[in-house]
Image: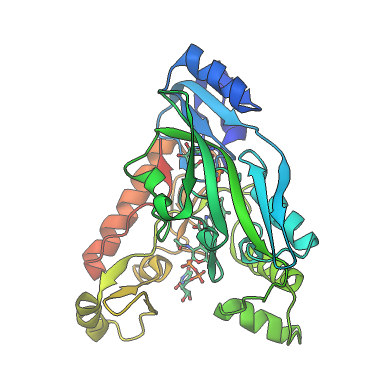
Length: 330
Ligand code: FAD
Ligand code: EPU
């Protein structure tokens, strides 16, 4: 029996009977043939809450490699193994002055998980550089290429969280990088931090370093305290629902999604509900970021889930807005 403590950033003490790493498609096919298509697949375990105390079989993605497929003076097309560390891949691109993903520096986890929830931060989502991915069908053991348009990327969303959930295992992802990159400093925090450093014409290296500084100051390090980043998605509500809400809460921060929808920061809703830094036993919300649920030591997956449900209920009672988990509940 294997302990999974080192395989999930929430530091949940679940166990499993069989834990296997796969290094290529052939190895993955062999494992699926032996253990069946219903197994669990992990990358870095940074977006999973293990509610189940014991699993049968878990596979860990270790497919590595960074390969340039095509390039000219304007762009570079790069295929990367799904088991590569995301941050290291971003920094590889920054080092080669290949622009597009630098605002996503320091996001934990693997490249293969990035398209699943279409990771995003500081003004960029991975979809804007994403070209295609290669994935193995769990049951048929055939490989399919998914182009950007069929992935149905949205805010923390893709087809792999919906119609194709648990049907494919991503083995490679291809990104298109800009060789004449234009730094994206549109996000308020990034702009302010660059100004404080007197950087007026940032390079993509400046952006990556600035994002790393902001993230290191704001978000708890899972090596120090168990967490999976934002536990909930920021709710997107209709303009009319927003107009009703803002009458009672005129200071509510909000971002325009499009003409009909508004995004509200869940961190603010939780904070205003009096739950920032709230603790019960070994779980609660982080003292500096109300949207991050933490494991102070030996909380179980169930205790963390109960905490999440409590937060959801309190927020709904105050604002009549439902906040939905972003983290995958296992
Ligand atoms: P895992 O947690 O291992 O897996 C997540 C899900 O994807 C699981 O359901 C798993 O089965 C599935 N999966 C994983 N790999 C594959 C594969 N190859 N094929 C098929 N399915 C697969 N996210 C953001 O978007 N923006 C942020 O700013 C951000 N900040 C974070 C900060 C912290 C401190 C932490 C802990 C997390 C943060 N996250 C953020 C969440 C997390 O880093 C991302 O969701 C990341 O992409 C998860 O990668 P992973 O390899 O750890 O995935
Ligand atoms: N805020 C509070 N109280 C808090 C924390 C924040 O009121 O305790 C307010 C802030 O003042 C700000 C707003 O909430 O007005 C938003 O806060 P922040 O800029 O920290 O961003 P966020 O909405 O909490 C989102 C993503 C993060 C991503 C950052 C930067 C989601 C669910 N979360 O956080 O992604 O890194 O923006 O782009 O969209 C993740 O997905 O795991 C994650 C960390």
